[in-house]
Image (cartoon, rainbow, N blue to C red):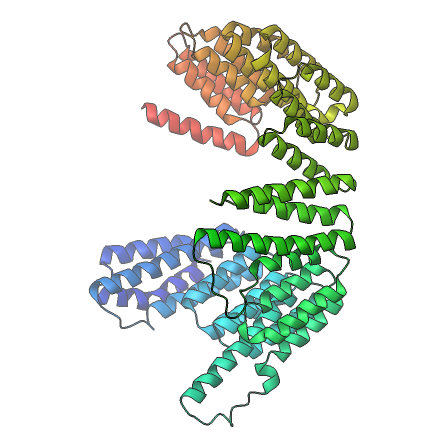
Length: 598
């Protein structure tokens, strides 16, 4: 191995001599480079190989390349690049080839290789890298798309890009993204040919010899891809995605119309189609001869007219396709337009009225989805329509009795109304709902009680909640109980709550850290109490949390009543309990802390 390393270092000598001779590096810097290179070579030549060593090698060489470039600029010297930079680039490529052959499945490593070649290597070399990567990772459509885009945009080879897409589709015949990007590429190719032809015509050059068939110039290849793809991939959403791509190209108006007509013919029963068609009215251009609005009032009137046209389509849609999904699209549109800012009071009122009418119609038809019940209730509440808000929220809870969200909405309305029935409704909700879903309601009840009831009432709620909520959900509840106790009643109450819960597992680390912080905020901070809290925390998290051990040691060192002599014992306990990376992290932190105290 030593001979191989020596040989590779000797291979570097010509470039290093050139770097010294032309004044880019000093003799001392060249020696440092040789020493570092020897270390790096040793790591990638030994019997047991690690990927990190190859990455470090490549990164060092890239940093060296960039440094050489900066120094060239500084002294204004641009010669000898073949002997210096090209030699380094060739060496880095060799390391990448070895690494990618050893760790074939590491996509990130391949992508790093690609990024390097894009910046430093030739296009032919990068093309070979893409070929090698795709031979191994043919199951990843994103890599095929990346390679095809590079062939099209950087290498300017539409034929190579087309071949890559065709090969990719043999591996992934059901991949929508491949069809979308292939479709886009053919349209880009047609647009590029059209521009080239126009430039020749402007220069009055002979265009007859240019082999530009009219079908290709009009985007016929893209049309073939479109037809093939919709026969394989069904659904309005994919269809619309192709239409959105086609709309980026002005020359493809006929293709856009064809796709739009097919969308309406093939996907009439899909809410996505109606949603797209309706929203399209917002973007419809003004009629020829019409001047675009200039004043705020005229713009508001135009926006109102466009929204009315959208709603007319939605009204037809919910008659043709009376389903929850279709009404959801309609209501989402109404809410989006309502929340859009406008300075026109009239437009704002129209939007509100339109939204309310749509909600009421959907409810009458019993086609209002759960999320929309929530939206409607909150909208009514925001506009102080309390009576209707309560009615809607009540209807929602009757329809969706197992929904915590709907019970929360109804409670929100009752709280806003300052109703005396809030506590009663909370009790009713807990009867109707499954216990494992009730955590948000318990928290809401406690928060409401804190502002509206006595401390005794709030504590009674927390105690009920702790008994009712078990498992991982109870962790959040205990943290909130402890917070409330300290916030509302002070340290003594918080300590009493801590004592009452200290055996009620599971806990979070924060539960103990909160108590430690509460103790530190007291005028007479007792070290005995801090030790108790740390010991209880370490009983639960001592095998995984290195920070707890370090903080305990710091506390013994820094507290006026701490016992520094205990630190050694704490350290060895930590080493016994901590596992794996947590132990290594603890050792590193402890060493840094000791160094800081020297």
